[in-house]
Length: 192
Ligand code: MN
Image (cartoon, rainbow, N blue to C red; front, side):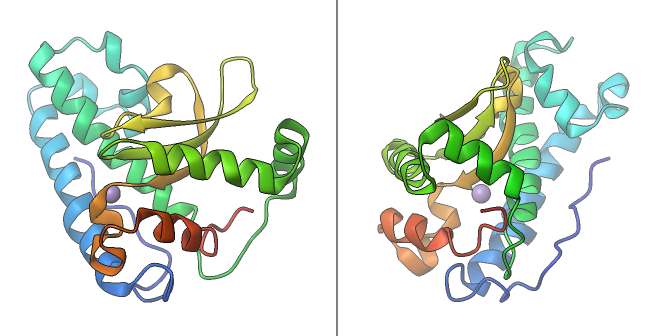
């Protein structure tokens, strides 16, 4: 049985960039529902219950499950793992990862160039999804977006920075203004 991971800050800690009501609903309702649905699917697969959420998502394509259940695990397992990571990388105060910052600058030329690329990926993701900074199979930094709850882990990549661009992540405060949400979000990204 997977459970909601602890949130290391209060719902209002990321105000005014991410509002308290959005945090509360996003964490206690949306994230919880992904976990409940994942637990439901895994009910008939005792072997999978002994794996971590990350391992399940990483091995999604080779799990011994029905195709219908693979689709459910893709959506709800992805939702579980992606949100767990998302809460972790936000904070009211910066705790800059100097090594990551150095790698970003070396790969993309500057922090600003990286932010431009990442923002473009987040803005142009059509419909629901996520923007990512990952290390790929050759340990190179890459920026891209995925649809729905698809995780870079399934592609063999390691996610370093994640941004949820589902409407549920911003609609209460920003309505249709995804661009404003993305621009403000850099203020609560802890790592850079
Ligand atoms: Mn979400």
